Each structure stands twice: as C-alpha cells, then as structure tokens.
Length: 212
Image (tube, rainbow, N blue to C red; front, side, top):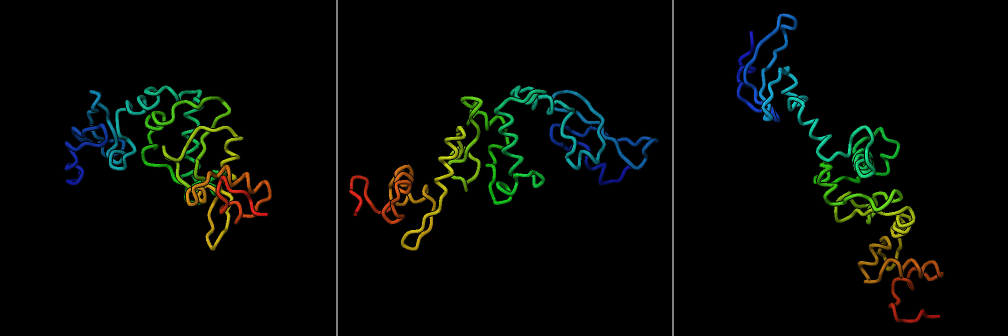
C-alpha cells in the first residue's frame, strides 16, 4: 500500500523530472518506484526516496550536458577547468591539506562561480601554463573583481602587499595603505626595501625628498 503522502507527489516536479505515477515491486515492497518524465522527453523509473533527497534530478541528461556543454571536464581536464575545480574544493573541502589556508580562514567562492560556464565567461583561458588563479586581495573572496591569472612571480609580489604595517595607531596591509594614502603599493614596497621607516614610506609624498 502506497502512503497518501507519497501519492500526493504525483504531478510534482523534481529537477527536470515530473512524477507521472507510482508502483511498488514485489522485490522491494518497502520502497516505491516512480515513473517520471524528463523535460528532455525521456521516461525513467526512479526510487521516490531519491527524488525527495534530490539524488536524482534528471534521466541522466543533466550529467551528460554538464560534461559536454563546455567540453572541459572529460577524461583529460583542461587547465582552466582544473583551476576552477581546485578553487572550489580548497574553499569547501576540510579534508584537503590546504583547506586551512582558504575555507578554513573564511575564503569563499562567489555564488556566480559555482557554475563553471560563468567562471569561464569571466576569466577565459589562462594566458600560459605558468599562469594560475591569484586573488588580488589575499584576504578577499574568489570573485570576478578580486581574481586574475598570474604567474608565480606576480603572485609573490602580490603576497608582499599583504605585509602588515602599523602607523599612527592604524595597522593595515601595504595594499590597504595604498588606498588610504593614495600611494601605489609598489612605491611603498620599494621604499621599505630601501630601508625607509614605515612612517617615512607612508607619509612622504611621491615628489617629496626623504628627510635626512
């Protein structure tokens, strides 16, 4: 006997599947099978439990579309797809060794980039095999405004922007100071490398000579 609550599911839509009718088998009498029509036109028998838990959302066409639409995630994944996949995993999978540097400290991926197609539309292919994803603000999220393709040397320069500098009771990174005092972070870093004090590096105008 099929329960009334389960019968009430007939006609409802689950992902791409519309539940047409229900029946029980003698092999598994405690489970109920649903005859479903996919929006692609194919029919498929699905366990009701899998529909309700969202484990099954189509006749199988969704999975085929996701791996063939962009052609990037086949047996040999492309560089851009691998970068997208790793980006999401290191922000969401606590079992990864590098999780503590990303998701573990609050680094997130914007909702738009949960879709590879939208990520690819924003970022395109990396310029070379030496390029990888780099967050401009190392404490910010993965999003179109904060991510670029960069080489390892470019990324190392970006990391130096994250050096914390304290002046007049305020502590901020070189990149943050550059926005506050309207000096480029490159100028600030160069001054520090030349031995300038933090105060001199942050308060001396570009065309002003350093005080002896």
